[in-house]
Length: 287
Length: 163
Image 1 (cartoon, helix red, strand yellow):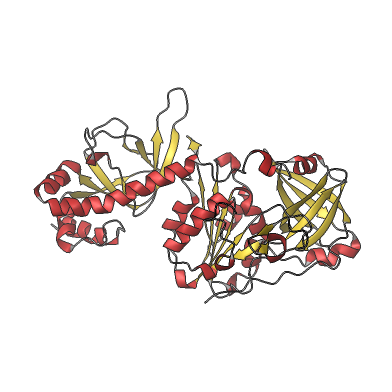
Image 2: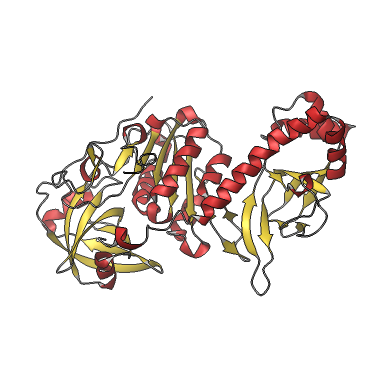
């Protein structure tokens, strides 16, 4: 049985940039941080209604605009979180901002994880590196309605123990008897007592009933490619496998064409795609 | 005899040997013994004779490389159902890494000389063992190469500059 991803809900005016105030900045890793943003009153309802997996365009005035996935809700009033890795000019400018500063926000955009349609199935989350950020709201949504799902498995891979994102959340999820969490790193030294190896090794080991399993994957495409292969080897169908892709998104609504991938736009038709409807980025080198 | 039967039955649950014939299960089990290691205990050390081969029944094991002047570098971790060690297959039969139990770990320990002797006596049996262990070796080599690819890193350079 294939599952349908939720249709994108376009923002009421996708071009309008709203000023959101940063209420909190949290350093997650050496190069990764989370901004908690307060929307203006008129944007609060739309902000609170985001679907896990969607993204906002964050605009640093005078610098530029970047697509950033929503990494969680933060209490009342539509306050939401974005977890960002500083890798370029705009994300580094975001890293320099402090509580009280204002960023421009457009969104939310794109298709999210099919949380509701996965009800009744086992769910496997496979994340790598900062790919856990767009999946965190999905994990929280499933845990919030845990009784609607079968087995719930979260597999996470990072470069090293120091690069594990949301370690506190992983610990909290792992402490639940109804959730299986396993973490692995590429390399570690003496004190680390966890797994060493790729996240694909965790997929090979975990107990799965493939025909009842829906998989959500997010991370660098190199990781997704091998994780998709490992899931297929375990019998999880492409029609039950979802992944989040990233391209240079600009307009957010499929008009400018910057994020076009084969016949689809990552900003409008994704970023969450069902594997059997995904442009073949893993095999076609030109994509 | 009871222990050999118990090991033979255990091997049916081990993915790598699950589809061996009953006769071969008994042949492998005849070289086996049960063993237990406490958390933190060393199972074997790099450079020692590869006189044993293990299958993990329960628990977790990590493989470490000793690097002078640095803490041990952890190169892999293995869990229930995984075979442990293949230096016993290849002369000069010397272990390449340290193996330590990360928690209470129960293993089946096989006498490598006993297995090698049975493989030399019965080429079909040898072929059956190689057919099952070579894919494990190839899989771990591929994983090790992918670990070198830094899969969780962002693409470097201009491809991320727009961000």
